[in-house]
Each structure stands twice: as structure tokens, then as C-alpha cells.
Amino acid sequence: MATNPRIPPLNLTRDQLATFLKDFEQIKQFENLFAVAASIAPDEVQAVNILAGNADAKAVQALGQIAALAQEVAVCCSISDIKGTQALDQIAMLAQETAVSIASAENKANQAMALLSRLAEAVEGLQMLPPKREFKRSRYGSFYDTTTQTATAINTAKAITFNTTDLSHGVYLGTPTSRVYVDTEGIYNFQISVQLDSTVATAEEFYVWFRLNGVDVTNSASQVRVQGNNAEVFVALNFFFNLKAGDYVEVMFSVSNLGVQLLASGAVAPHPGIPSIILTVANNIGGIQ
Image (cartoon, rainbow, N blue to C red):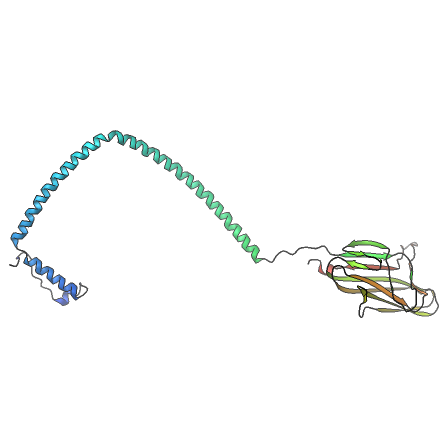
């Protein structure tokens, strides 16, 4: 087959082809492409051009027929176009209203999300904080006795009793009235003041201490020596107790002579009455539990 003089020969080396082709296989295909192009005869190209011309003519005829058909369809559909336009306008209005509704809904949704975010932050903050401790009002009690109390035997323990409750919240007198109960666990401070007197001339001993649930409290006692007849002595004592709900405390005493007594006297101007014993109890050490 003759070489086509209109196609220039491939004047490139394979090294030059490798600068823009990926591999040896592509180089070979490129060389084959030029070889095939060079082998096509002019008469064959002319035949192809004739065939192409005939196809173009037929295509033009087909396009003419399509244009005529389109025109007829357009005339027939003019009325439909008007109705279609109206329908499209209604659709556009509906879409606009829908868009407004959607925008309003999105706005409300954004507000709700903002509130939820604030709530989530608040909840997270609460989780980081320690739980709020419950406030419990402090327990307390104030009691005294307006009678003179004496021992029934020397050197024998006897419980001091109370006949008056001045103040009370969670601390109360039981039965017998020497027992002072608490209704809440805690550390309580018991403070007593005792008015002593003696009806004998000799110096006598007076001892006072605490009992917890019927058992003497270790190292809770105090000793007082009353010197002679009408030798009034004021005694004060306090003690801390770690109590459970339902525990009770008593104040005990003993004397070396029955003439030593816990004296009570009425009011004489300018002073008020003198109880034989005053007891105050408080757990304000742990008011918040």
C-alpha cells in the first residue's frame, strides 16, 4: 500500500516519545498509529468523504422533519402551556409559602436547640458540683431542777433528776427524768452547773460524773471538798459525747456525808431562783450533716 504524501513521516526517536508517553507499550501504539495513517490511500479517503456527505444530507432531511413536527406540537399545546403556566405559578406560590414555613420552623428549632444546649451545660455543671448537703437544725436541750436533792446513802452513786424542760429540740428527758435522750447521731456537749451546800461542820467530799446508757464514762468525774456548815459551793462541768440516736446520758453524784446536798432556793431580791442543777446540751459542732 502506497504512503500518503499528505501525512508527514514520524521524525521522532523513541527517547523523544518517552518524554510524553508513559511506557514502551504506548510508544509502540503511537508508532503504529502513524504507520496506519500513512498507509491510507487518497481514493479510500475520498470514498469515506462521499459516504459522510450522503449521511449529512439525510441528517439534514431528518432535522427538517423534526422541526415541522415540533411546530405542530407547539401549536397544539399553546392552550396547555397557558394552563401549565398557571399551574407553575400556583406551585411557585406554594413553594414560597412552604419556604416561609420552613424558615419559621427552622428558627424555632434553632431556639429549641439553643435551650437544650444551655440545659445540657447546666446539667453538666450540676454533675461537676458536689451534691448539696441537707441542712439539719442543731439539736439542743436545756433542763434544770427546782428541788434540793440529797443522797440516800454515803459513798453510793445516785442519779441527778430534772423537773423542768426550758428548751428542747431533739434532746429530751426520759423516764426516769435523770435520763437525757438524743434523737439524732452526733457529737454533743453536756454542760452542768451544780449548787452545793453542807449542813455539817466537817469537811466532806462531793463527787460528780457522767453515765452513758447506764455505764459510767471513764475519766469523767470531778471531786469537790465542801468546807463546813453553810459552805455553799458552785460546781461546773462539761463533757463531749459521740452519741447515736436513742442514746441517753445521766449525771451521777455521791457524797461522803448525807449533810452534803444539791441546794435549790427560791428567788430573793435582787436575784432569781437558784436551781439545784442546770444542764444544757447542744450538738452545734455539727449543725450541717
